[in-house]
Image (cartoon, rainbow, N blue to C red; front, side, top):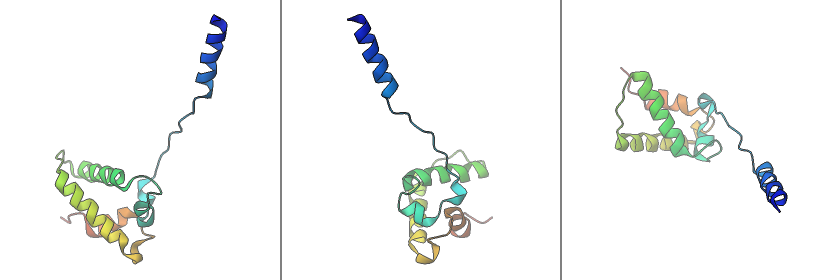
Length: 100
């Protein structure tokens, strides 16, 4: 009985699904991919992008309202058919990042 239980447990462990780690080159995410969830949830991408730009500027401040506003601005810019194939990074650099 103990052997049967042990074999059953080993069998369950052996057939559990393996999770693959996925990496994404954010510089290559296009507006189309961003809007259609082809890479990840747009909200997750917007959060990552916010952290990236805050890190570049040395800012440790999180402003949730500004994050939401910037994500909406990015979505609006990406809805423009002329921007569908452009990388979101290019859209951000062109229109959303404060030029100093």
